[in-house]
Length: 295
Image (tube, rainbow, N blue to C red; front, side, top):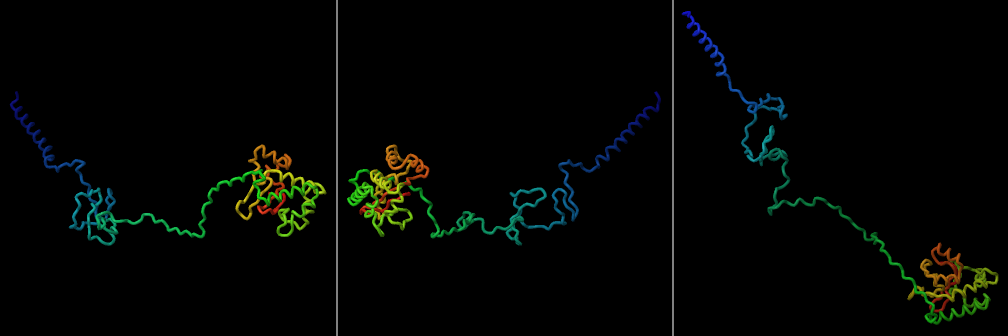
């Protein structure tokens, strides 16, 4: 073996240790390495905005002696709300607007906030208030009568006189019964200045006026009704069809009607809505009120 071999190996080992020391020494003297979660963001320079919060760095903050509520949540980049009873200039604690009044009423409950919705006052003028129209019950139909004994004696007497005069076939026999002046029998809806007997004959289909006398007889031999009972307008009316709706007539009543008019007349009345042929009215005192056509 070469006598210099051990010296060469020792020299190489020392060289390796020296190299290792040179590599390790910088690591031991290097500053500590922080985890990413432990890194603190650098504060922005004075006058610059914080990119995370948008707040502008106004420089070193002024110390404050105001207490911090430990229960108040601290949001990133936002100051905690503090109770500052001495705040002014329209700003309350923590930058909130001041309250207008105490949080509690003297009794310990919440203060009465007053009405939330104010209903405008409505004034009603009693002079113009109208009562809604009530649904009126239909008027009862008058009873159809055929017993002449139910007529007052003056009514029975006048009826008998009219029949007797009509049976003569002479219209002139009606003059005394028709009367004159304010109590004259009404022969038309609009009144007439014509002589009563002449006007009566003009209503007849023949020149002698006998047809109208026959109509008088037919009408006074039908049933009748009593209307406006207990009033100044109380009257007995023939035929009863004049006061009974056409559509309510039963078959027997339609036969009574056909004794006075034709079937064509009944159809016309049905279309018209009411009886519109001759009718007679006599007051309870025996005054011949009217004999005329119409409704």
